[in-house]
Amino acid sequence: MPECQNCGAFVTETYARVFTPRGVDDPRVCPDCQDKIRDGADVREARSPRDP
View (tube, rainbow, N blue to C red):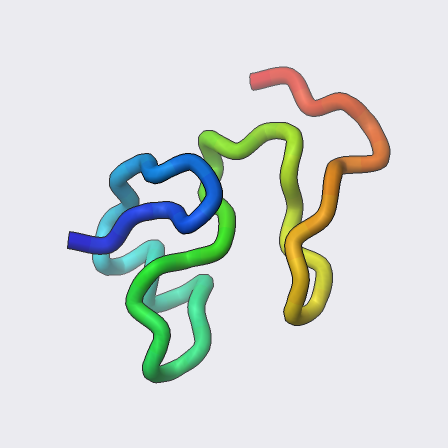
């Protein structure tokens, strides 16, 4: 079962397939990580606050 590498939250297999490169099962961040965003091959703090 895929999970977020940042917060450990469950993510669906479809989400993991879309937002991870081939050969990687767990995404670096997920929609629950409001303070983090993907930036190329890295994860960084969001520059502006994100409200759910």
